[in-house]
Length: 85
Image 1 (spheres, rainbow, N blue to C red):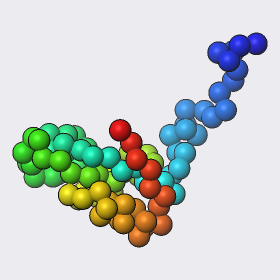
Image 2 (image 1 turned 120 degrees about the vertical axis):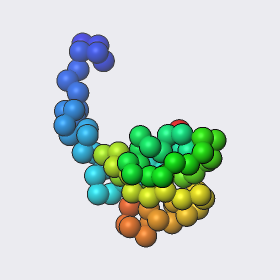
Image 3 (image 1 turned 180 degrees about the horizontal axis):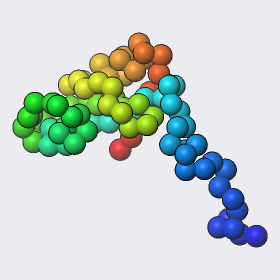
Image 4 (image 1 turned 120 degrees about the horizontal axis):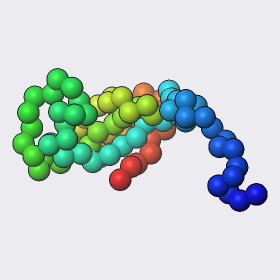
C-alpha cells in the first residue's frame, strides 16, 4: 500500500473544525484584501499593511496595525496563536 492508498485520518468536516475554539491564525493582510475578509469594513487604501486574527474556521476576529497587538489579542481570548503566510 502506498501513502496515496491510505484512508485520510480526518474527514473534510473534521478538518474544517480542527482547532475551533483553541487556535487563532495571525496573518499580515493588505488593505486591498479587507473587503473580502472583513465584511462591512470601510475602504482602506491598497498597500496598507495590517495584521489580522482569524478563528480556526476562517472567521475574522480582529484587525490591528501591529503584530504584537494581534498576538496579544489572541492570547487574551485564550487562543493559541499560529502564523500563516
